[in-house]
Image (tube, one colour):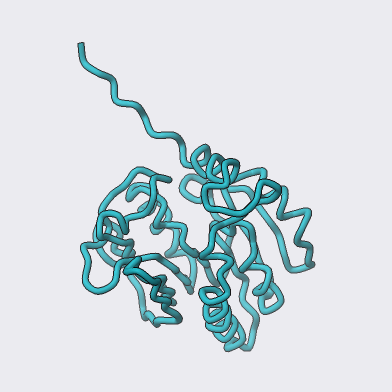
Length: 219
C-alpha cells in the first residue's frame, strides 16, 4: 500500500498560524512580525534609505506594500507617498491594522499576492516576504512585478557566495538553512530590469547571514 504524501498547508493558513502562535515572537495580545521589523539597529538605516528614495521624487509615489505585516515599518513611510496600500494575506492582521493605523493616504487590503490581481502603483515594497515562499509562489509574484516601475526588495540571504533560489515548502523557515537565498534576477524567476541599486545591508551576528535591500528599476 502506497503511503500518501501529506499536502502542505495553504500559505494563508501557515501565516495565520504563525501570528496566532506568536512564532515570530511578541506577546499574546497583539500581532508581531518579528525582530526584522522591530530591531532599531535593523530598521533605522532601512527607513533612512527608503525615505531618501521616496523624497527624491518631485511627484510623490503610489506605494504598494506587499506583506505589510504588523505595519511597524510602513507606518513611518506613509507621509512620504501619494498613496500607500498595505497588503497582507492574514485577514485578522489587516482588520487590526485598519483599527490601529489611520491616515488619508493609507489603505489596507487582505489579498493573496500569489493568486490575486494587484492594484496599480509606482513602487512595490517586498520586505522579507519572498524568503518564506515556494519557488512556484515567488514566480507568480515576480511575473506581476513588470507592472511596476520600482521594486524595493529586502531578503535575508547568506554571507558571501551562495546558490540562489533553492526551493522550499512555504512557511517552513527560509532558504538560509539550505545555504541559499532568493535572487529574483536568477533562474527560475529571471526578472528583467533596467537598473539596480543597493539601498541597505545589515550583517547579522553569529554568521546568521545578512538582510539586504535592493532597489530595482523595472521599466
